[in-house]
Amino acid sequence: MIGVIDSGIGGLSTLYEILKLNPNCDYVYYLDSINNPYGSKSEKELKKIVFNNVIKLRKKGCKIIVLACNTATAICIDELRTTFNDLIFVGAEPAIKTACDAAYKNILVLGTPLTVRSKRVNSLVERYKQEKQNVILYACKNLANIVEKRNILEVEKELNKIKKELNCCYDCIVLGCTHYCLIKEEIKKILGIDAVIDGNKGIANRIKKLNPLEGQGYGEIILTDDKINLEEVKEILGSCKVC
Image 1: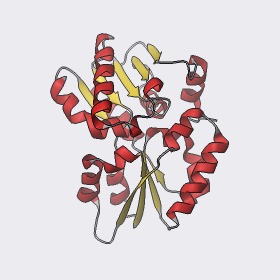
Image 2: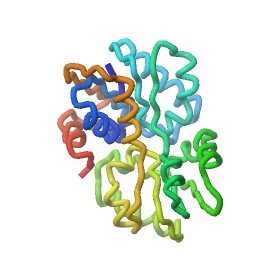
Image 3: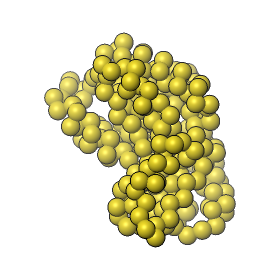
Image 4: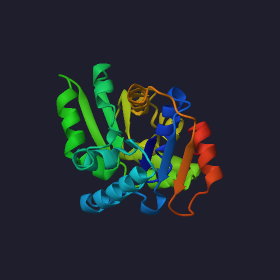
């Protein structure tokens, strides 16, 4: 059984890719919208939330836990692996290595404030940035929260605001938040960059290697509040889009 955790609908983009490669895997998706957004929490507060969520999924019988949130991965995954050594953890991280290996010269990484400040993400830049490459980490203060509200007009307004603030040219964007994967086409259109990379396919491939025996296709979605209903969640999971 695979457990997938996110602060809301963003992790559905991760689950979408997992199910494409592993269509019969058994999963529980923990949609923790009551604590959305993770990216604005303090590290102490975020760790408490994520650890409690892991305990709940372990009680459900989950043996593999996917942190479908770049912020939760950056802040929590090392301690989770130490604390819960009976579980396997797979985290979401910005695909900085992929962008650097592809020899893009000017790489823009979009993430939440906590993600772009984290030592883990900054170490990825130091490790994989090649000579003459520029990697810019940009904190999107409110974008994930707007995506969560599923208002495409507000999404477009925020992206136009980001475009004005950046005022620079990039040849690649790395999505450092799973929420942003649900608006990938809007990001391409408004920011004017065709090369938009995320790490969800890498997570799906990792799950396929870890979970070679297919399950029965059991799926459960846990909603922590009533900001979204089950039918809306299923619609987003089916299309990997918010609108």
